[in-house]
Image (cartoon, rainbow, N blue to C red; front, side, top):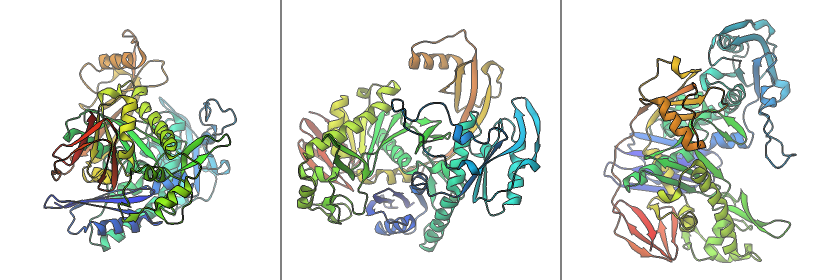
Amino acid sequence: MAILGVDVGGTFTDAVLLTDENELRTAKIPTARRQEESVLAAAAAVGAAQVERFAHGTTVATNALLERKGARTAFVGTQGFEYLLHLRRQNRAELYRLCADHPTPLVPIERCFGVRERMGPEGVIEPLELGSLPDFEAEAVAVCLLFSFRDQAHEQAVATELRRRLPEARVVVSHEISPEFREYERASTTAVDAYLGPVIAGYLDALGERTAAAGLPEPLVMRSSGGVASLEEAAAHPAVALLSGPAAGSVGAALLARRAGFENAISFDMGGTSTDVSLIVGGRARLAAEREVGGYPLRLPAVDLHTVGAGGGSVVWLDRGGAIRVGPESAGAAPGPACYGLGGTRPTVTDANLLLGRLPAVLAGEIELDADAAARAFAGIDPSAALEVVNAEMLRALRVVSVERGHDPREFALVAFGGAGPLHACALADELEIGTVLVPAAAGVLSALGLVASEERHDRVVPYVRPLAQVTDLPAEGEADLRYTGQSFELTVPIQDGLAQAFHRAHEERYGYADRERELELVAVRTAETTPAPEFDLPPGRPLHVEGPATLELEGATCFVAPGWVGDGDGDSTLVLTKA
């Protein structure tokens, strides 16, 4: 069965095709302004034909949110709570900068409206009056009423009325996208989903038409939670695909780590624009129930990623004090780093690696590098110092997902991929005292390989918010959000026999104590229906032994083996680097 995976990044679009003959074809092309064109070009570059399964990772939703290019959206809430998106939480945007402000809400205050109704935890407090809902115009509407996670009747009635009044508008109700308590986070998630809907639906419709015309099957779209969804499901709720590409990278890293004999690993994906890191425990990427994207809370299952603005295309600059800074601004694909010869003049991380002799003369995608242009861009700046700065930024990210989560990085392998990840892996492993680095042969396109290896997934959340002792309908599998009664936040524990004791142990491990006599409250249960990914074997790799310092060219990436490190092929196309 031929399987195709295409991942669109900010700088490059990657494709992986696993053929019926167990041949792994890869391609990397610059990302075009219209992403569907990049998808078709990448598929053509690997000779995709007679494909039975096609999975796609996209940055359209992420870009639309960060660049504020979504739909003209309105918000409807319970009267008296219509300004929820503007009230937010009381926490500061930045702890030590009193003047720093939160991102401007996606819905301006003049398009926030209230409807007279009130639902409480035990039922209706004030009946719904649809006549109190004012008339307005919008391309999309987000509806989030109090306690709709427990009783959806009022939200459903409001949505029906809005669809009657605004037949062309996209209406999203909170109990469909995020049926959980905490009104602000639920409202924020609903607003993001409504805001992105028309933009993403247009892109996915265009993609579906173009792929069908090219003879490809309808693409499956990677969810943030590490599984794929149908085109229709992704178009219905695009917020579930906000971390589409990075999630695919974590899936690919988990696959390679398992095949190399490591159940626990840290995924390190350094691309052209940013670096994404995540933790792999027990052979699977860890999930989080909530995260922020662009400063907006999203209460949706997602791979527990930490992202920093440090990539191969990150611009190196001097601040007013003369100190070297790197990123978050990126040169992107156009004009790209100075050494690309496409008009870029500002120094980047890629230019620094070239000047230090860690890159070949020609990169994947047939990009010829101009060392003289890189030298001109770095006039007056030490390229080795620039790499130390960007390494420090990525080191902080790796500590966030390991040390700050209570894990000892020395007990994990580091899976380095992305176009630039293997160049920096040894230096970061030295800092964290990690003894093994795994570098896939297809390091530059591992996110696309993760798409090939992804399962189909449907996540479901059921809210409870009641004492655990009163719950009798727990599923056999899944995860439970639990807390001591009176606490503000929860811990997520796998459902098992002795669930209460499992929570006490998890609480003691995280916070250093457990109160085993205190009542527990079950907040929510998370389950996922999955269809296993296709089974396949990776092509065997060639025997290899290398001692640092050395530079190796890989598929779409370059690996720098630092002094004191030794690399050996594991027979399965993965390079295993260990301390000499």
